[in-house]
Image (cartoon, rainbow, N blue to C red):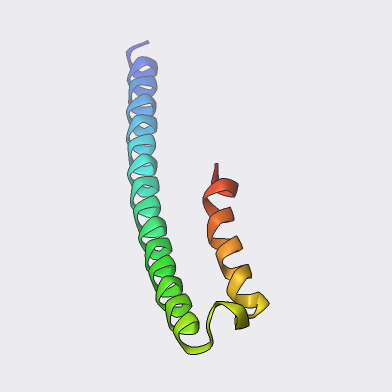
Length: 79
């Protein structure tokens, strides 16, 4: 009986360790994901600013608007 309970305890400990490792990996992944998203948004802001300075608001092309649609939709779709 004692070897069976030892095996069960070891399995429970291994499962807990695996769950903790997965939680940490998810935290690291989310941190990297949102950091890269922030860099992308900053780059898009600078690009939009440069485009407005170069051609003005009236001469922006559809891709200038579509990129902002994509930026706004990513957090919404992520939920």
